[in-house]
Length: 549
Image 1: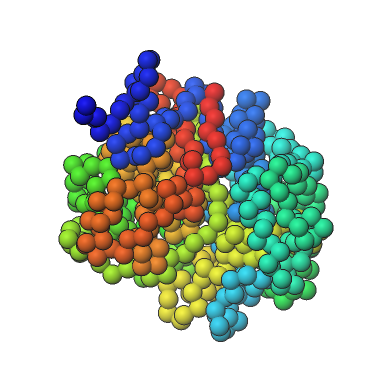
Image 2: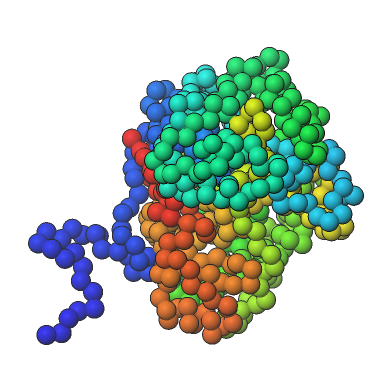
């Protein structure tokens, strides 16, 4: 008896669409739908906090602040009060997009001469001025309706009373005993049992110093709401620790708000207006790559085809090369943004793509450890991303605060003449980015993912999956991913071998990676439903959950 190649809906009562989609190679789960509220984060407690805030009368902005603060407590290796945050806000009624970038600001003493051997990757000299708290305060001030103490209460409770350590955090904690530099002492003291033994998954981790710092953020408000972090006790402790360890951040650096409201960068693609973070975010790479992709028949080639992947990879290389050459902080340097995002520029760049041959690799791809999420209320959707850059950031935890500092200053160049060369009060080119795709007053897809230079690459694949190949949000996340990694084209092993062989024959240095690789993507996506409500999806590669009501 001849057996068919594929059995669909095996069983007495087969359910239509239970089978996986061709090219996705994953269980077909579909998005989660709700009529009023939705949240998708990379930790269940963050999703739960966001939903609870909205159910109790809070807005999406309140929910975003709550989720972001819970992430600080539950994912300290990826984000913290000493880190950064960026976000986009879409309001359905007026169909407007607001953009905020908060982070990557060099201290006033961060001169080029101070770093003759480059910025160190860790330690007290690796940190930019923290922007995370400025960012959440700006969001709460603009659209929040619940008191800050109500919004921050879940994070304070999890820090004070403890929370069960997840498998991913337990794994990250095993890194800490190997950090033997003196500046890592406080990090080990606070986050290891007896300062030496990592917590196991399921064990309760308490952070009372962090709980008190969060209380000061909400309580210690005098003339300026920023005082609770950037002026009084917390600022004094940060300045003292930095001075004692040989760092350069002090209270003068805290006088200027690091959160910058700006017009989102935008282009059009597949009938949508695509919005991205303003410079110096690398979101411009995503927009330029999409402009280049318009010149190729991705719809016709289809999901998982070697032609489509080849062209997406090559367009990404071109956009990264332009970013490396031109992009800097537009508040300090002149950046040819209009040219880089023009359709004419993309048309010329598209001519450089040889359909039969891979171009030279992109130099020096940056990895990082970050977390992102999406939340939505009845009228507003927010795509939010937060980070300390590398896993455990600079490894400097400020004594008495529970605050972990970022190592974002190491993203600057120290080569004179480079666009991204370090300078006092300059913002470094930043990997953090989120996106929104809007058509006819509806959010077709929006979201983000962690991963340093992998972010824009993975976000491009989410957008193409939805807009070109008609995938639902969850399938767009679940489909196999590829990323450029220092000259290699890393591809999840769920890609068909014939596709990998085809790409290798064109000159790509193809390397298979895990079937579901949580290092290259942990996406969270949201879309509005034309009849009202939301669809959200959360990445199986992470440890999060999508919720809607």
